[in-house]
Every structure is written in C-alpha cells, then in structure tokens.
Length: 209
Image 1: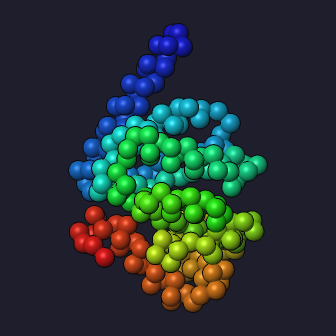
Image 2: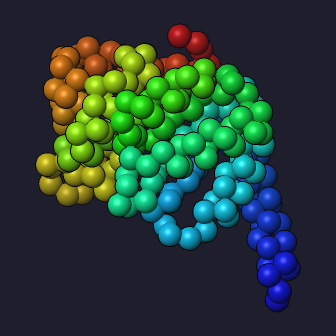
C-alpha cells in the first residue's frame, strides 16, 4: 500500500473513531478526554495534531475537554505542545466558552499566562508530581489563579511519597503538598478546588456556580 493510500486509510479510521467517541460523550453528557499532544514520543506529531483537530472540530460551547499536553522528555516545560494546541483552537474557531482542564499541568508561570490570555475558561490540574517538580514548575503551581486550580492524583503513576500504587484515597497527600507550596491551608485550597470542579463539570451536575 502506497503512502497516499495509507494516509487516506489512517484519516478514515481517525474520522470514524472520533465521531463515535464524540457522539457517545455527547449522548452521555461526558467530558471529552483525555486527549491532547504528547511530544515525549519522537515521531507522529503531525498525526497527533490531525487527531486532536478532528476532536476540536466537534467541540461545542458546552463541551468540557480534558487535555494532556507533554513536551519532549528533555524539556518537560516545552512551549511547543501548548502553542500547537492553542493554534488549533484558534484556527478551528473552537468556542471560547468551552471549558478546558489541563490534566497534570507541569509548566511555569509564562505558560499559565499564555492560557489565561486566550480568554478561555482554562483549569490547571496539579498532580502528585508536585513532590518532584523543577523550580519553574513550582513557580507555576504558585502562579495558578485561585479560581482555576484543580488537584488530582493521576493514579497510579505518581506516588509522591506514598506506597505504590497511588490511588484516589491518597488525594489528601497531594492537597497537603500543593497547599504547602502555595502557602495556604488545605481547607482553603479544598474550598477553591471544589468550586472550580463544580464550575468545570457544571454540564454534568446540571447547575452553574
């Protein structure tokens, strides 16, 4: 099979899978994700962008999307996947109202500002990686606005000092680490995260905050 035929077959498979996935999510009122761009893989970046674009073409103002964006292993704070994602959003005219959850956010203050400046309702999920973040990443955690921060375990991959495997029951440990880094109480952080979760998942909860 020639390159052109393989490309056409790949695009047909992607189209069918994306349509089926989005149809299921919309019928169940589920969030879409986790989808995104993982550039720790050395190849297939154009294919990843093609797949992500097909999802973005089908996002409406009420679609909440969970995004996974990762730079190359040697540059975990890379701007490239973030900029590629924002370019897709803008180029495909994805609704400015569609909520976005940046899962396992590992970037610095500059990338937080980049996302906030888009005017989109973007939320930043901080995971157990907070226990081993670079200085720039720690600055990023401190720079997340109070009305945009979320906390997660990313079970079972990020033990952050607890016995493996990491499970949802360890979320309290992550809250403690994040609150200490941000210089606030666990209670204050938990209240903010609860409000933000209710806002991001307003479609699923059937209410607005």
